Image (cartoon, rainbow, N blue to C red; front, side):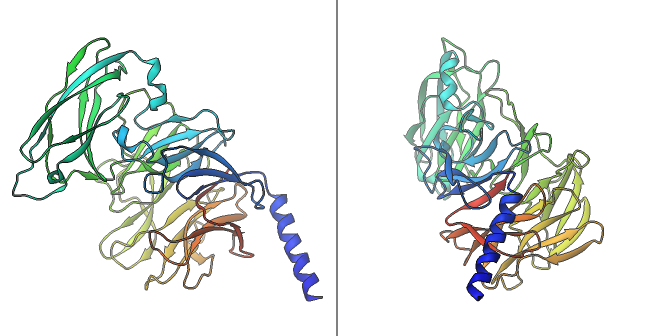
Length: 413
């Protein structure tokens, strides 16, 4: 009898998931694949991958466009041939329409542009007596629009001139020049490439530590699908139009004035009335909290709820509820021995706990379009090499069930 009851409960759960299906969950597997799966765990299939996508240089995160027409994702597979360490790309749910959003266009599109050559003199201005990333001496160098990067050896105090041939001419715009050592980058606005001729770029000085993880991570769409926001490695927020101008470097901060500290998670409003509203975290000295602010406004916005008294505590995720009545956020305990998802309601201004994990950690999560379900990352540690699975549960945390093993960064269309 007990077995029969459990079977009925399981069937009812699956039927409930089927009933509200109406969408598809995108997620990342192994850092090398964008995959799609139905909410009941069926029809798990690959959407996109690339031969150069490897775990250390692969896919970081993704997000469905609100109308479901594209998936945006952050990937480092072209890190050696871009201004950024990671760029944003989009692909349609049938696998077509792949294109690059940040530092567009993608290298596969260079063939449609006229070509010129660029001469760049690189100079390592790092003093011999001062150690930094620039002291390493071996760099990958690249000009935006070039077919391939080049490698040079440049000890402190040395100079070397490199010529890039067959560089795509993106028009009347400066095409960036970048030097790369590991996760660190140095760059200049570059040079206006001229088709059919060789242009000389300004001398490129490499000095200091460079910028670590200078790139585009964690895509978040605006409700009207016109723009995608992202963060760089130090959690400052920018956004790019969905149809970027080829060769144009976009710097369009979400905040005016001083950027809040440690805003590694944020979300754009889900409805037409809240489309210009931002939820975001700030990890300040003394208290960390979640705020709401109109895009382009100056921090601090409206303080909604503190989530930690620990200095510089980072949230794992924050997402509006689809009807804009509140939001969910993923946060760890004071002892950092577990993490769970919590709910904040605007009407009551109260926080309630959704999941109840012990010695396990929730991470990034997504909410179903009808607001009745969540899919969340679940792991037993916070180590970089931890195993992450995706679980599905009701919006109140009830009936948790494994959706797929070895997946992260879920997004529900």
